[in-house]
Length: 62
View 1 (tube, one colour):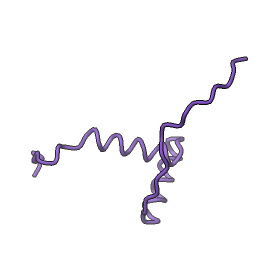
View 2 (tube, one colour):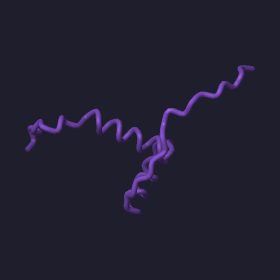
View 3 (cartoon, rainbow, N blue to C red):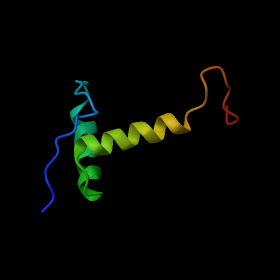
View 4 (spheres, rainbow, N blue to C red):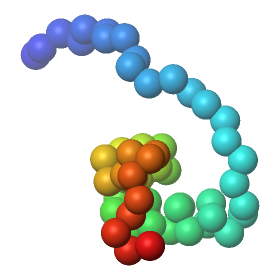
């Protein structure tokens, strides 16, 4: 049997305020993807940040 080796936790807890409706939607979607609420929100933020335009760049759709 392999030994348990504790590792430092690389994420920090934060608090944000959201509407109840948004939390319900997040909970529903995270359950559909079999993810925790935190993991789902982190993946959504990662995706949004990877796909956003630089602040001074105009979107071609505008």
